[in-house]
Length: 524
Image 1: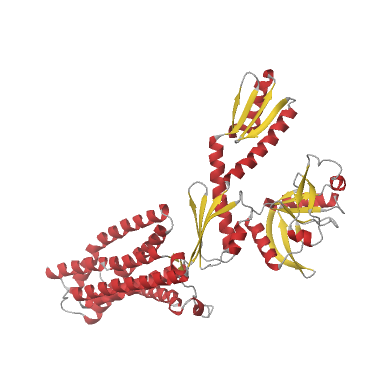
Image 2 (image 1 turned 180 degrees about the vertical axis):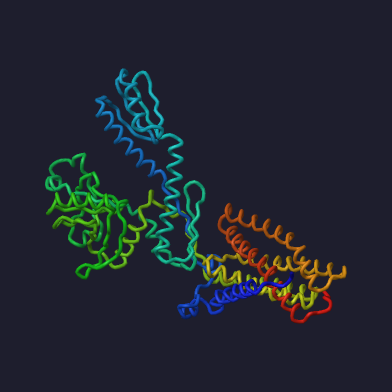
């Protein structure tokens, strides 16, 4: 039967009302929308870089530094293994992701065996009968580490940018070692660049007091390392550099949380360690009361306080001559985690808001022209029934705006093109339905029977057409990037809302009119 059940009619009306409520803040503008009561939605559509202006950065991940670090670790491992197996070696050298050394010819099989046992498939081993051994990182390992470094860098960049409150940044991989970062609404990206330029590698070391006292008289032992102090540490009365134990007692990956706070009126960073880090921190501070404990961030000693008493529970603070903003940025970096490799800025562009305003105006004109053309055509062709289709089309556009606002999707210039395309496609379903109703009326059916048959017969064709288009839009979203994704988002939302408005909304209006007016015949 053509009559729609009451519960379904109320549901259709409810969805339309909710759509109007979520779309309404866009009429007020972002600033005025924030003044709406808290129980009302106040989110507006996020505009992309091409519509509201902002900054575009092209970053390069220094993947070679990741490989160099792994090579250094491999070197330490090789030396340790060879010493433990009492295998003498000489002419030890390292270059081009390869470690080369010589052993006695009779020790070649043993050397290969212990290296394979310790390093496995991560390395490729070559040897000669004369005792020359070459151990290089395998091609598979190099590719995996580069991919991992890039993916981890993208995730860390996303965390750091999100912490600054930037809405809907676009962060995408480009090639083997590059990241595209678009920041809508930001025309001064200096703070973002400062945050991204820091690796945020945090370590905690004991100070080598013996070497500090005699560093001018003898060489620093292999087990220690000289680290320069940061500007804030020097300003607070610290030394220009420190000699620290090479082995880190704690590392940044043991941090659970970090936040800015105040201690004795000074900005500090409070941090909390995981169970493993808390236990180690408690043991170290218990055994070294009265000794300095250096905190190293990105190769600089930012603080070297003395351990006043054992620190239990895993909670501590980083003190120094920090400003409030420095403390906030440091806490942000520590929460987001350390980058696996430094980032280099290859390209920087700023898109002015004027260009975005021109794009929005052009998009508005295109949308209005398309909408008026469709309205004119559908009303001239189908008369009163065309008016119903137009009302459904307006509801469809409202639901698209509401969905973009509710999900906080980013609207770009290609996204506006998707909306314009949806306007043109939205009446297709109504055209199919009206034509079927016209055919059924011509064959002598009653108005109610003709409408019922029209919707029933056109339904499968409408479903097929919308599903195939939706599949294409989803594939564009999955495999596309940047502008293509923006187009796919609005097109996908438009397909769903146009199906609802054409099948549900127009049917509700048409059947309500039929049951109230009870016309003897339908003229379409």
